[in-house]
Image 1 (tube, rainbow, N blue to C red):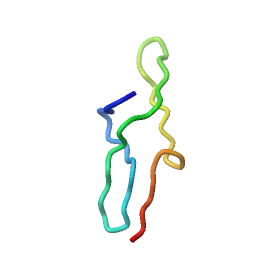
Image 2: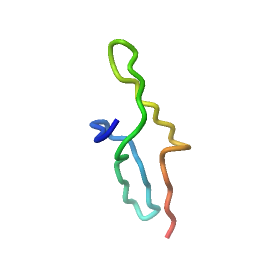
Image 3: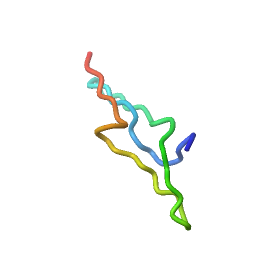
Image 4: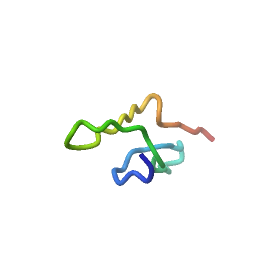
Length: 48
């Protein structure tokens, strides 16, 4: 799913900046899309 409306963190920088996740996999459950976001897999943490 491209251009997520929800505010999922895609990258976090230790200086306080957060960047939104651009896209993510999703599954249609018959009524709605269930976004398959896993913080441990989809979010990057940058130190510097």
